[in-house]
Length: 419
Image (cartoon, rainbow, N blue to C red; front, side, top):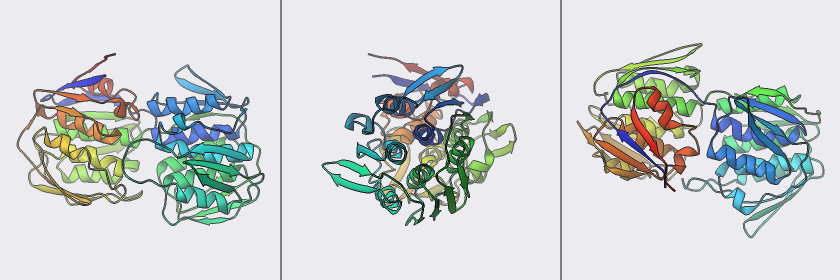
């Protein structure tokens, strides 16, 4: 098993370019099915989850090729509407293919998705929304059998602003007839990026980034060349890494507007964070201060994906910081591993209390999930000695080269490949 070796105690200094957004490219890859042509995605991150999406596309008869610093996808050869159980289990967001296949083929068969074990993430909102558009969906034996010879636009009111459900409905609605209005839609920047891609392909999507999104169906879509937005969670990770280790860094292509709550939390901790059209600049020295309670919430609230890395950055804070996780019930699985490094964290239900300690020490730790694994790297940068982070396949799901990026900022970190 491959692992990371992190030798802490070195301040970070330098510049790194923020990779393309994982949470943007996955729904966009699914949406390429609507075009029936060639799509070129620039700034596409090479991740395990992207590779899983490519395998799904190839299993459906499409082609995908990495070339010229990007990914070229050709969906003209689509010849199936079934995704295997093995492929579906590789990642949670595989459910995003349901709306795309249904819109293109009029039917779809797939199993329930897999991915990080962060607690129940039901796709009920996806299914109820697709049913509102006219899909017939049968559930049984862990599989979904869907038919929709013709999807019809209508109003869909989401009980929660689910990102995945909003994306699935946007994609499916493009392949239907009439206008679909999604009420209480998710507002994340990745929703805007998906809309930008669909519109570049000839769709007409309005209101992305607000709580009401409208999609005019029945328009013929075509291929295009599209730039994936920068990954705001990767940017948050490197900001928190610099807060943990101290230093002065610049994140090229980082977007401060997408990270307002994270940047505000870091400023409370005593860090300097400024943004401009080129990226985000960060500076900090010494131990951070404790900050006001951090409560995760749908965008524009504090992102659940940044909770673990901010917690790791504040392990040596002066005082006590409270975290309240309101999105996923098992999002504190990284806490026990951080405590192996000397952290003082007490968890009670959805609340975690972080009491800052003066020193962290090295320890062998295991990544429990994608963001929890990144948090271990953030903590290790401030720990004394050499920390070994194993099970990094979780980290590879969302970071193109976390070791290389941190090394570019001056960290002493290396990836050790093992058979």
